[in-house]
Amino acid sequence: MSTDHHAMRVNYRHLGQYVGKNVRVWGKLLRFEGNDTAIVEASDGGNITVQWAPGTATTMTDTFVEVIGTVKDHQTIKLMACVNMGSKVDLKLANDTVELMHDPRFYQSMFAPLP
Image: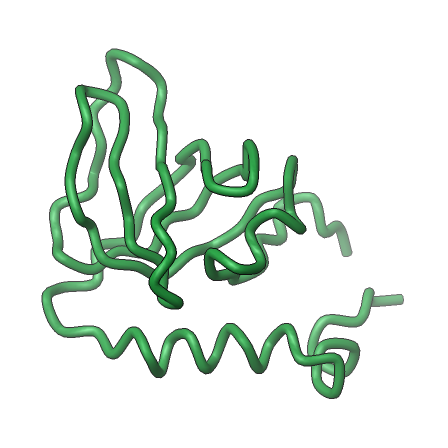
């Protein structure tokens, strides 16, 4: 099974470990900057810059979103897709989930490469 399209869930703290890789980030849409950038508060409180191709429209419309994209640097994601999640999301619970996914006690059993 290919992992080319695997997108690990991360928060701001883990973002820098995935430069060049696809990730998923739960967060709160704070604001748009221009026509091709948004600032999203990740589940752990860090601000992430989300960029998309100039001239394309974003699908971010809800207060809470899941951003799927490629990490450009420790605080920037190039948007591939967005899942609108409404106006009521428990970001603390989302962050606890992300942290458990990155905990060495669980990571290998949950995300070990398939044979």
